[in-house]
Amino acid sequence: MVGIGIAHISLIFVLSQRHVDSYVPPPVNVSLICHNFHNVIYWNYSEPSLQPQFNVEMTRKYSGAALICSHTSLYHCDVSSFTKVIEEGYRFILTAIVGQNTNSSEISFTYDDTVYTDLMDVQCSLDFPPVNISVVSGQMIKVQFIHPFHIYKHAIIEDEWQDHMEFDYMVVAEDHLKEYSFTCSCEQPHVCEAEIPVDGEMDKHCIKIKGKMNNVHVLAHQNICIDEKHGDSGPSYTALYIVIPVVAMVVIAFIVWLIYRKLTSGSFPQPKMLASVLSHMSSDETLTVISTPQEEVLRLPIGLKDQEWSGGEVMLPNEGSGSSLEVTRGLGLEVKSDFSELSDYDCPHRPVIIPVIEEMSPGDNVTGYKI
Picture 1 (cartoon, rainbow, N blue to C red):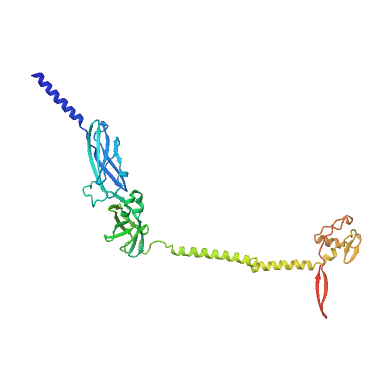
Picture 2 (cartoon, rainbow, N blue to C red):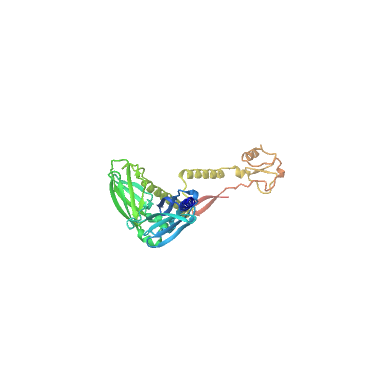
């Protein structure tokens, strides 16, 4: 009897031990980040020493089931590429596997929380596009931003593009906490804009803004402010934008006019001062040529080598006082000490001006000059 009792106790212990060994904890702290159409499931495990593997299976409301992550040892699974249909509900089953034993947890989400109220574990959202605020008048500000469809278009399946063309959004002015609703169509220019009344006595204006695109929440996570007092919206560049093109056009027109004058007249008009200087220089040169009597004196007849011409008389080198040589040197002409070495080409050639009297008609004579 004693032996039978011991055996019975041993059998109970073995069965209990097998039951303990077969228990596998499920994944815990399961969460899903559904943000900007990037969807990732995260979880933890209470007994990592068991070295479990995990399967992530997705079931959809209308499209059936799919195994997304299979036998992974990671503690996360990216499901973005499997959750692109906005008008769908998604449920995920996370299974921990240790040997032949398994245990599971679930999580679900939907983009459109107005249809699938039973899949509300996670609320998906999109970041609101950058918003620009400007002052319109003392009582109005303008809000401008890019239509969200143009930012997230790449993540939306083409069959649903038409459903995302309209964007409904609300703006709350912090001045008086009043909400204003607007609709922006994607068929219009890419920029959505609206004017909001504000308190003109305040130096700073802040707004809250949010909206929905095909029932997907589009949220701004902080207030958007403008620190600019009405009536002092900063320097205005409107006048500068007008003046610069006008000045450029005037400069271009002046250059074109100068080119035209150059092509039509052959030269640019000379300033009065420059014309006076050139005229004076020309007059001096003329006077020098006409009033230099030595040119006739210094011109030597061709072939006369050992003689010197002065005042119409031929003088030998030893005759006279040598004044002709001094005059020649004074005029800057080269004079050789030995006249016998002079040739016809050694003598400088200067023009000789000869007066000529022409009779134009009986009793009408005109005096001219020739060289």
